[in-house]
Length: 99
Image (cartoon, rainbow, N blue to C red; front, side):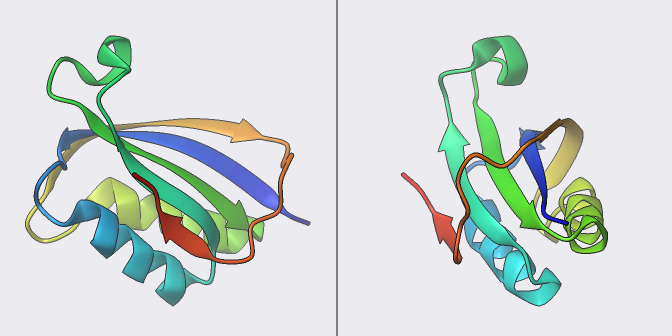
């Protein structure tokens, strides 16, 4: 069964290679979707922005990916992760970094 999670990652995650690290983690964990920097949701991230990602896969794989994102990359500092579970409206074949 396909699961989909939409995440907002809050903390020091801009300018530290977090999106590229997320793409690597997606490959390791076998999930699809996308990741991007987001500066438009000041209600979520504050004025400094954060990272937004959408992850699809089996429940087990998505949960492993969420746990990796909660920990963050070695050079980032994740303060909080907001997760919304959704029904998939589009099926992704790979994982991409969006602008």
